[in-house]
Image (cartoon, rainbow, N blue to C red; front, top):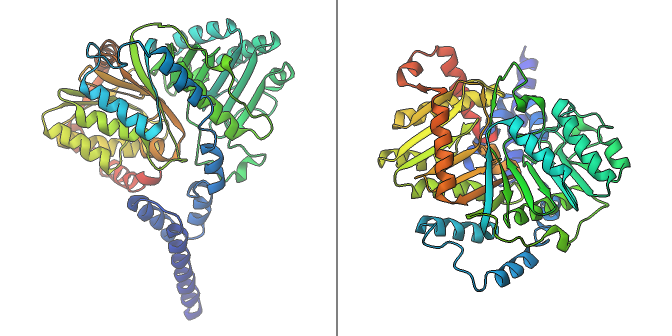
Length: 483
């Protein structure tokens, strides 16, 4: 027994020592540091295996490889845009944008070098079938190129329809390039894109590995959903490629998401984003600036917007800062829709200040989890916001996957980033920040329409939850910095 206790003591001491060395060898925020210490100390061996796959940060070399792509197309785009707008009114004229919008535009120009584009036309989609009918039709009309990124691409009915359209265009000599995330699209067979590639197209997995079980970078995912057609039409938002996004999975029911089609010069930053991601993904087929990738487009509508990217290659957390700026500027209302509500301390405090200042804060989350652990953390933070005075609605007509925020019916954001730590720090994301009261009010009306299919989560409901459920929520919240 004495020998057993001695060996156990040595193991615990060594485990604690290596846990401290492992966690502190890389720069992290305090919350994430403590969360990883808990995992490594209280789960000996198992915790280190988990850390090996999930906790490792991107290597300096990989971060450099990603950052090195950031100049492609942007210098030419900025210079051409300056010439085009030389005799035009300010991008944010007093007729359309307030001082708030101007401050937002300045923030993203400084933090993400995100150019501000005007005269865009936007079409919003909240139904998967409508989005894919529009997308597939536009792909069949492509004349020069189709560039596509999806976190999830499945081999099912809608996946094969999209693939067939890509194959058709590749056979016609159109440049077809596809990036799919290695983890999100892990169900794909290795030969799924074989015919497309035989026709001249190319498909690459982001941060993939020939040995997927030992892929040590799977914690850093390309969560973006981007399609660019001829540099003139762009799609981005929450929908991935799979039948579940058409509401055909009984587990989720109707899939309620928000996506948009963009026509205008805001497509060009999406194009640049694709080129960066492509060149960071492939090793033997690098893309360079081409005028056909960046055709300057005449005014299509009247929407001003910026395309903003964020990811683990930057410490700035551009999209999170945009959310904080929007929330802090709100004077009347803040409406948030997200499947995962796991804010860090800065966002949580900003929202609580808004509520205490008399701002109407409404948050909508799903009625069911697609990731149970994260959902328990979501319900924990929902309870925090209710205690602060916000209204939290549970969408009860299927699964809510939309990632939107709108303030004062004036400015809104639609994109791929969830309202959680993972989207802000670990995933590669892209959002559109839109400075058009008409689009913002349309998004607000969509929120009100969804309220008709939701129920209000009350303090009484929370008080009546079982002790076991409350424990799971508190326990999940402890690990929110590393979810």
